[in-house]
Amino acid sequence: MLAAVVSYAIHLIASAILLGVFFVVYTKLTPFDELALIQAGKGAAALSLAGALIGFSLTLGSAIVHNAGLGEVLMWAVGAMVVQIVVYAVTSRLLHTVRTEIEAGNVAMGGLMGALSLVAGIVNAACLS
Image (cartoon, rainbow, N blue to C red; front, side):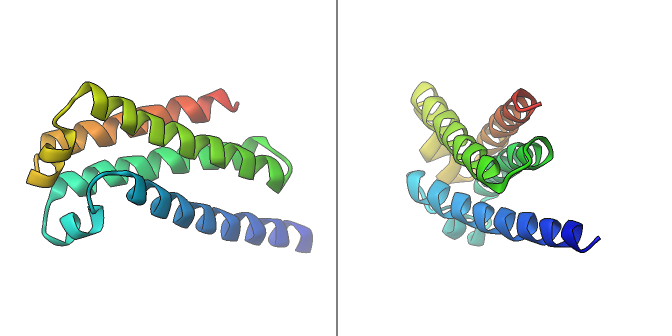
């Protein structure tokens, strides 16, 4: 029983740290300040960032379920970060107005970006099973 509690705590703490790292890396790599936009009431930034966080979390959760060791979980988490960043980069290249639309608070664009991040996270998580 104690071993299960310790394993749970280790995975929970590692996941919190990985989510924090993802948050910092993702928000540094996007060309706008998500937190400032969210504080200014721009729902588009919140939707886009939330989708990326949830998409990353889905893969992280799947990695925890399907891998015995914390090292493997960390490896898959790094992969999930890369996938989320690539999704943003490719989409913003294809849709040239992503930055300006998010900064302007276009909720439709934020929703699309968030949905694409969720889709990537779902598929990425499924690939681990």
